[in-house]
Length: 158
Image 1 (tube, rainbow, N blue to C red):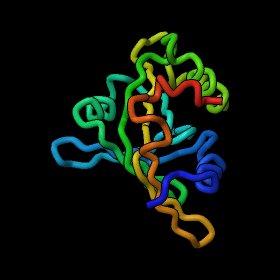
Image 2: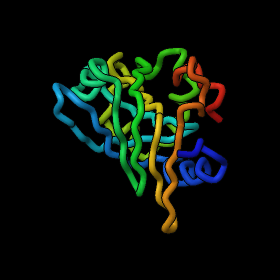
Image 3: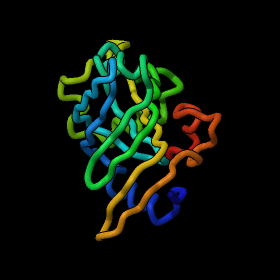
Image 4: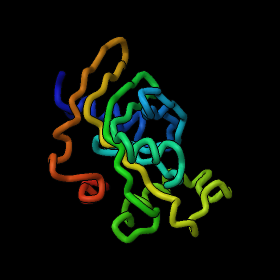
């Protein structure tokens, strides 16, 4: 397994550095649950707008180990709830998500007056990416220093 390098980072950004749909898997009592979510990828993490009281968030609170899959990519990661969408510390990523998800973010599906409308960060740990007949086994662990979570990583967000 190789560390995320410039070639694989560029492939990830090209594929997922926009509004994309991925499958997000969680586990509860040994049973897997999978659902499609809109997501945005940057610097080793996917960002998702969701509802804090949803089953996925309850399952992540009990077991933060998750899996994602989409467009010839599968990975494991850690689900990190970032809290209310408009929390001050979410300012940079919230603005980016408003831009990336502009086509649907204000269609009535999200209630931004509800403090349970939150951002989920899926910090990737390892993944497999296929491109042009080649397999890339990627180690995402050191994309951000181990002691940083998605919030502390805001300076990486362009």
